Image (tube, rainbow, N blue to C red; front, side, top):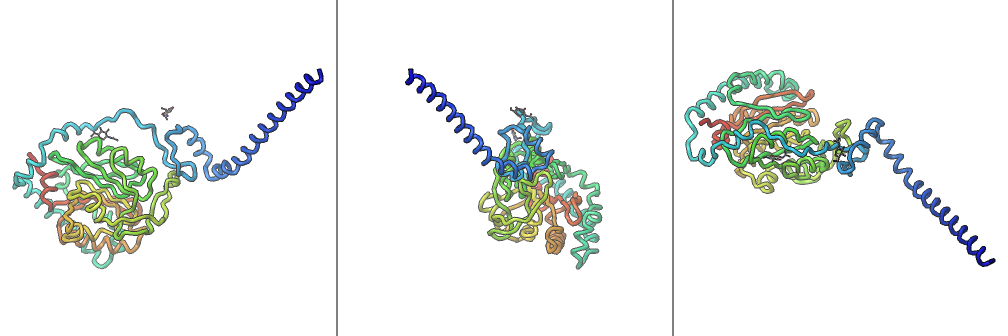
Length: 370
Ligand SMILES: *[C@@H]1O[C@H](CO)[C@@H](O)[C@H](O)[C@H]1NC(C)=O
Ligand SMILES: *[C@@H]1O[C@H](CO)[C@@H](O)[C@H](O)[C@H]1NC(C)=O
């Protein structure tokens, strides 16, 4: 009897001890958790907190320090191709075109375009002689006049809208593998995705020193490279958009791994012709603009750019005003590129679209008519 009661008493005590231990353990874990939860709440605005909780676990990004990060939408199951896709997919092969000479009609049209464009832009640029600062500030309001030349209408420049700006392109008149290079992905790949759904056979290469979410976004259709592009190899300050600054789009200066422009295009990607170059690198462009000129480092490697969307950021790098000035003066002398769609982004920041009217392969591919 006594033994029985002892056993029962022991069982009850044992049970109670287990409950107390479990309670303490639970309490202990909570105590450890609290500070972490607090810090996150402090850094996260209230409205954002609710938004984060509605995002499925699978699409959260791990390095968003403030808990915001890039908000991925559920990837839609069905890709809807652009109306022009079929037509572009059925174009004659460019190989056959290269055999044929560029038609005299096309040559005349290009000559006419160059003549009209340079006659329009040269007097405008000469008014800024020796004054790069004025040129950078007044660029869009003055240079834009030449965008309205009727001949530009006939070359078929079409928009590909990004979330924050519009990229421009001339679609090919023959079929081959197309190459697109994005420098500065900037958490925005709408325009690339549109191009991917419009133009068959396009290889996309994108570089940005901020890895997430750019890697994840760009990998949907292309190959992503996690570094900045500049003049010299190294570890240098670049203006970047960190993942944790999605809401504010507050760029900041960070030390990032930098790969030289020509080395990237020629040695890493092994490219000879880039059909679509989209450069938006927050002032980094000034490091290599002079390498695009005739007989420059890019020419020496035999790399040609057919079309280039360029954003010019002298605001974030004042010495860049001089670099841009020198670049434009050389462009006017060499007459390799015509440019249009000068549009403002901000005071001291503008965008432009350059078209190569010199390289025969570019001209044949984008201007040849059948
Ligand atoms: C995203 O997908 C998940 C799982 O497929 C689903 O539960 C969720 O409701 C979707 N969210 C949105 C915003 O469509
Ligand atoms: C890219 O385009 C191809 C068609 O060429 C399409 O099959 C694919 O789904 C597209 N990818 C994206 C992410 O839009």
